[in-house]
Amino acid sequence: QTEVQNLDQYSRMNNVEIKGIPKGNSAHATDIAKNIGVLVNVPLEESDIDICHTVPARGNESENMIIRFVTRKKRNEFLAASRKARLTTITLGLSDTEAKLIYVNEHLSPAKKQILGAVIARKKETRIVV
Picture 1 (cartoon, rainbow, N blue to C red):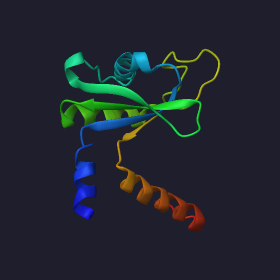
Picture 2: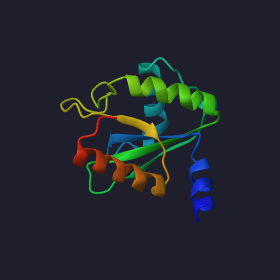
Picture 3: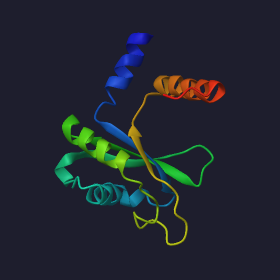
Picture 4: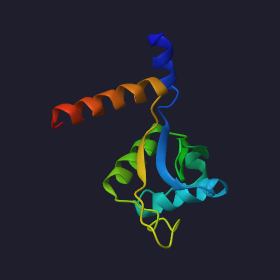
């Protein structure tokens, strides 16, 4: 079981997950990825992206987007720069009125997301500063 979970996570090593994309933008996923790249000073070319698509998020008005990069180096560059930027739906041109935050994270497997969720919940309970 653990080996399967590790392989599942390993298969996502070149991916990032972007949360907070307003619904209805799935046709423009690659353009959104390139736009984020420009905003964080890590320009993306078509050749940098293996695949880019949206996936539904649970009970939200937004979707998540997955970007699989061709190289891990480009993925790490993009991820580090995106985390430093405070991206919103307005800065990405996805909304004219409401500035909702856009989060760029590692693409975790369901097992790793569950562990992360438990750690965050525990941190809130005990008020531990990490």
